[in-house]
Length: 270
Length: 354
Image 1 (cartoon, chains in turn cyan, orange):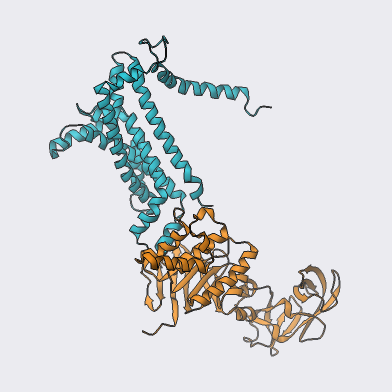
Image 2: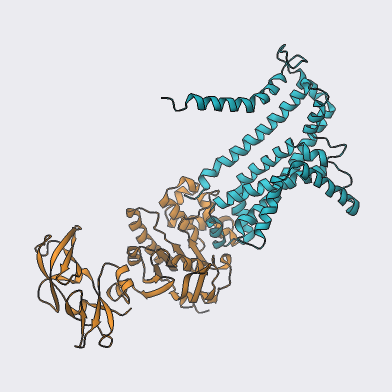
């Protein structure tokens, strides 16, 4: 008797096909020599070559990587602080409110987040004189704001799973609270922080809506280039561009999963 | 400067968690170079008391004086005591040597002095050969040794140990008990050990503090606790005992015990006639004989063979179940169903008024 009945396997297969075949098709057609998406004329790296000569693509890639790197770093710093407070500082006043506020970006539509960010930036420019116009900086702020929520939850979950005894032992051995944080707590949650950073990087890399609201004329990101190009018709070059984005995201997510799984089993209390 | 006589002194300390009282007005003094065991069932507040000494919990009321200085409000990292956790709490991202060095580095120690102190501590627990290992590559017994080395490397005034034997198997437990005693003699510092195991307490400690419901019931050397327990709880927690309710008789030096159907002769001093007390007789003080200060007849209900000794459960005529322990081979052994006579001297009866 089979452990996987035929029907269940069929459903699973159908689901996987529905989820991944479109993406795989994009990647496959990006290697198609022909200009027409429906006709396979041979394997070629022609479209990738064209991408490398495309200044707009190269600019957008650089923008995307800079935004993703900066926003992931800022989000990791802020999110780790929030996670530490939630997991290690007991029931302080306003904890529930803080949790609620932290979760809000997860449930708000991206369009609303983008629009409200835009309004804040415009108002700030008028009253404070900063930011002077929108560009890389404003996208970084917007993305960091969204991503820190995820990191706060990842860090909090990791800390809740870790016994406090190592931190208590360090304190008992003469380490001041700051030393306990830097020598014990942060090294123990480093894998979670690394995974969170990669997740934030991917969130930023893949975001179209918020970036569209908060970008300026010189700060087009990769998803924005793809989106505007598709409106003029799908060219094989766009397939190549999309494939680059998919591969970058997949690598980051794979790394994040590996980081979280690597020590997770060992640090949990027995 | 004269050395204060007590290593750590606790004065009327109280601690509760969300309305549940964990430590209820405990006063206790640990002398220099003393091995004190805090003994009690789980939930009696003994671990909380230890954490209060280390400063990991703040007291609600009372004072904690360590080596002559009031440290009630001192944070844990400034107290000259070290705590060995029941889980050992080794730092998973550091090697054995780094774990031991951690506490010394906090005092600003470095270089050759640091290396020498780490090696000393590891040699004391015979773990020097595994200095480069990570905690997840160690067995339970080895982890315990590293945790111990990490605490003693700091040369604290008081070493606090929370259930140090809980995770060890029986053979290792017995070895570790002796090693802890030897270590205390070599280091010359006070040890406070929390345990729920009366054998741990009896074999290691100079004095034992028996705790119940957040209070210290009795503090005494093991022999005194065994021979002269102050309450029913101590008598039954510390070793096996026969405990019966009784009433002080109007005749001198006697108590009336309904369960035994006997007016029991007592050597110890008694409260006023008519007061209710409990009496305790250790199983090994009772003999199979009909001559003695106190004698009853009964039927053997069960015999438990334990190698050097056997334990007999005898049902007395008036209903009490009497536990007797006799060395094997010293008398004709009784079997289940035998009618026997039991007797014990007046000096074997301990009178418990609480």
